Length: 380
Image (tube, rainbow, N blue to C red; front, side):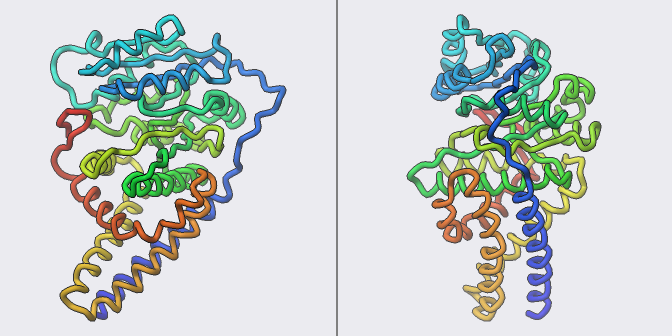
């Protein structure tokens, strides 16, 4: 019991220091909301939207793109249809007269099966993009009107080669949706804090921008194209390694992209397993160690919480450790929740902790082994 208690304390101390680091650096990021009135955009941009079986969402996404406050002559939108089995492509074709271009991936690829269709879709879109700055999002996302303008201004202000933008899950009425919303903003807080300090590279493909020249300089997805996931973080790490100090996080409420929650537990686990599957391919050893610490702490807490039902004396370790973890994370969640407009939702944060521990262990474990389903495909 003594050894178990010492291990628990050591992991909690390291974890608390890590969260305190993220908390400090999230608060230290200089926000960007108001763009000077004399700002005149001059950078041509290409918005890329890879889509597969998104008939239910693509129209709303395209309508939000058309509402962008950015000169029409300086922007283009390219939707790359990834072998959709529904009406996604037909819906996109309705927008052809509004300047939205459709590329069918089936016309560009040989017939053999590949493992990284999304990367191939983005790569295909970039090959035909005329913009200097590439912006990517997903077909189930809604873009705020200032989205492009914020990215362009921030790129010109910082000279960044790669910019990660804020993303949140749209709130709903179900406990599962709210759980995902909380989990997602915690990841966003870590993303912003880590990029701003140059600690490690993180990003989400729903809200990214990068220089086309930087993408070409690192040979795009070469070397990481064997993995289905990783069109965001693995690319970010390649660009960050090639251009040190040229990554940035756009902490602007006017740049927050909204995405839909997974509809059920099975879909959520498949998504998180997909995210976790790329961890072993990360180039940054620091990030791997952080993920290992987080995984081990959650695994230990899960073992302790279960073990308490069989050996009641374990509760003397499990319950205090569980409470300490909540208290360590809560101030960080309050700060991030305020930025994303989820202050009220954060009050329910402690109640989701048991579920968060279970799903972290499950996703971290299954993400390192075997295959998973993504968009109706079995991939590795």
